[in-house]
Length: 92
Image (cartoon, rainbow, N blue to C red; front, side, top):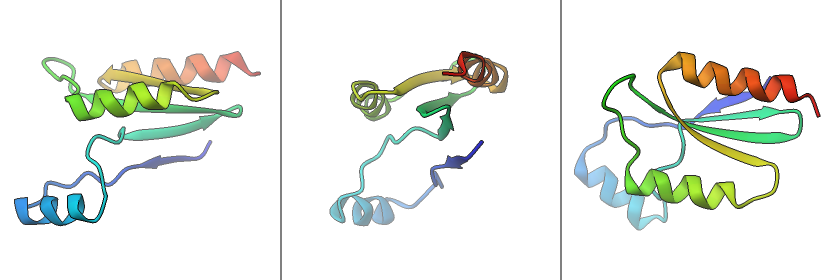
């Protein structure tokens, strides 16, 4: 199962400004998993107290409007694993 992790380093404000000026947008989900011709985007948050930012929610909403694209915010590894297992079991 192919997957990728978007680069999400902690960067200096000057680097953020350069990224924004070059057209890069904040908020892309942390994980992209391709399962049975579906794209599953997962924004990872800590188990307690993690919350998606407005930029992250904007990405998730726009992505979810696409066909065969599913988006989730998961608090911790176990919830993300359940999402992936669910899509693996659909097998369509």
